[in-house]
Length: 189
Image (tube, rainbow, N blue to C red; front, top):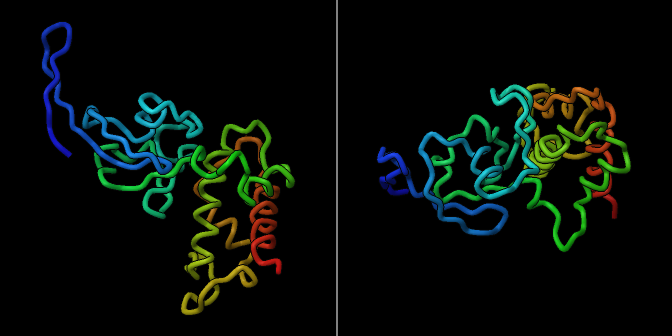
């Protein structure tokens, strides 16, 4: 990341920083205002509008993305802090126009209503599946000394892991069902 100055049309000088990071497998080098959130850079500069601006205060989860394997709220993350990191958005999940098993489960379980929160829900659920594969316990895991796996994952654990994502339409039971279906599909022989 480097600091640069940019003159505007009215003669004022504003500071910008050059940030290099990878988004959905594509490397980007951008001159941005150091106060820009990752959400605004994704939506306004890179035109990746799947990540939604809901509350813009970190309470709804509509802007959830994955940075270096961790779920992050893009509205609370300064884009400049993402230098040299790997950012994945909803646009980066599917490949060759094929949906991921989780995205398919969301469709099959009717885990969306209006669809506004769906990208954030799917990104959070993607991180949830990665956590389960890694055996990471949650706050409601009965014994945090034991590794979590798909067979031991309870409905309460799924709900707790998804608790940072709000759905105004109330599709929570269908979202839990979609996560369970995706886990079952992964563990089918």
